[in-house]
Image: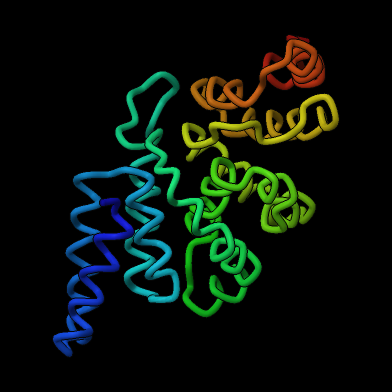
Length: 220
């Protein structure tokens, strides 16, 4: 029985015993359990239930962020690679959440990096076709005021992107712009994280050629 089934059974039991008022307490305890057990499948099962519950969702996405923010390349990331195929059942719901993301973020004061981060990580694995055309990705990238949000998501949750972020042969400029942003952070480890998104030598050469002066400025 997966996490989703267990959550459904427990919620149904509370309903049958007319104890729905205990839902908040139950979800609070479940989020605490997630902090210990970790697991991406566990995260999504919870997120699908509480994405509209302000305080609970804020707590959940913050914990997911905290688990990932300090990870380095090649560092063990407990639970980041587990993927329960049954969670594909959430494709429609996650698409709905994505389409309503701006309204949900505004109404509940969600952190944009944390909220979008869950959605984008989900689509990258479970619905790659939607990921490639996901409005929340394209809107973030095309809006100059929000592009940095997308770049931060890639840097924080880089271990969750098990499929390509962009078609490198079609959009090398994306990676050039991404690396120019990374360079502004002035921390070498971020360059290593950025390189995990590049698979083709042509893209690597283009990125290095266009950013080399910023990576290592020539002495005058």
